Length: 589
Image (cartoon, rainbow, N blue to C red; front, side, top):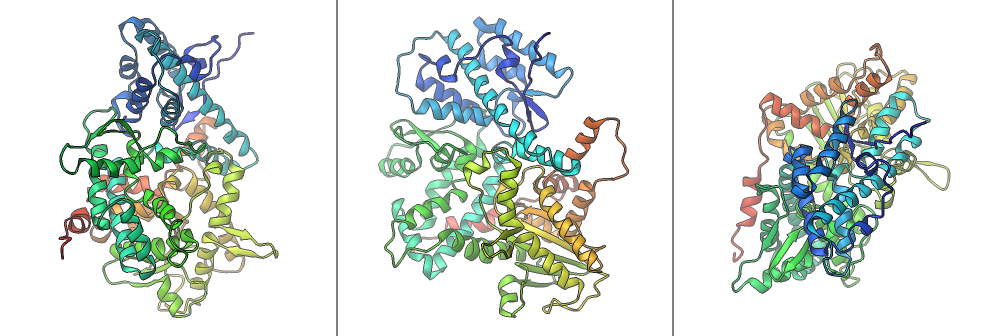
């Protein structure tokens, strides 16, 4: 019997090319064995080249274009053979991709740690062996994904399909499915909010002062003026390739180099095993004096805001006991993410007349178990819970639903305490608020008839890793279970909408349009309609049903982008009014 060729696991709606597809019957070596004598600097340049491809609309999504870039004339034969094998698979299946950021980052990490060696392979040999090494890493990735399938087998079919899709993508979705321009804009706005908060809060002033001193800057504005130019090439470059940042020679040369060298990965660096945390923290490497290469554009852009927390954490650890902030993560999440950033963003998208209370205002009013923010505009009530959290890197990399369910449940549903009680989190907090509204027990606002209002439960997240298809399905699945409990209590739940997970970046990016052109209730209503599953729908086979269920897993952040574009209401966020004045403020005043 002929051995069946394994063709890999899905990447999005496609497949990732594995060694076994391109070279059937050939026993693969380890990736590093293929590249002995290939030259460390050359491999690093190739890895950076691959990581320089656009996340959306790359010309190298065309496999002919890509294979032409990888192979020279001496290897035309092998390029054509590989392409023929790809087309043979694609004739009866989905599109095959060759390059994946995971494999490119792994390639970079391994060879950055190697000592410089004498180049012994010919250029033609390097092309062939580099391609094989890359496919070996691809195969490692797809094999790791197999856990996703086995971990969801016991779930109901309605949840099994979206959760398999989620588990296969979650470890890397934040590094493959994004808009670099959108991330840059929201990172810049959030950075301004953060530094203003640190500057205005007496408790955080010592931390801010130590932070700017570490970077040898006079103020946080000075810091951003140094950092932002390093990120601009990532969103402005015309060619898909590696990007080098060349420090201009002049009187500031040494100081500018010293600033960047706090952001470069060192040759003696210990690389974190999971989620590329080391390269995230230091997304440049030094090519030569005054020349620094970007490893991955996304990680550079995320240094504007996301990376600042980790820098602050490291600086906080060096402060004297009197100045050190205890439990910095929880302080940051509550005092900044919720009470500053979240409040300001909600205020910006509901500028017109409405009834609204922040969580702090509700606490001051002694409202027990209040939501993090409450808005009623007409017959639409919006209940918000804000959760700024991160999943541990090793658990994020597991592909395992059981691991994800356990971690998300503790943060977003409920946590079982040692004494046997439950500590309610996001989903249960929203259910509690819904119950009070339906029983007219929400003391801050009673001027409504409970059968007239539409209740929109919203879970706000603060990181785009949760914009992974399927995530919303899981959180709403929990919410619907608890909503059935309210129904059993005899409450009128017919106008309670599905729970929606909303990345705060989506609200920041579309705040102008949401305030002026399209209301949040309109976008949410369109989203509910889009993701609604028709229980009466009939399918030709299981594959058709699976495709239908997968189409219902789109994250809200992706949906709102498409909706605003389709409606012609797309407007850039207020960078000019928020970021520019701060950066160009006269420092001498």
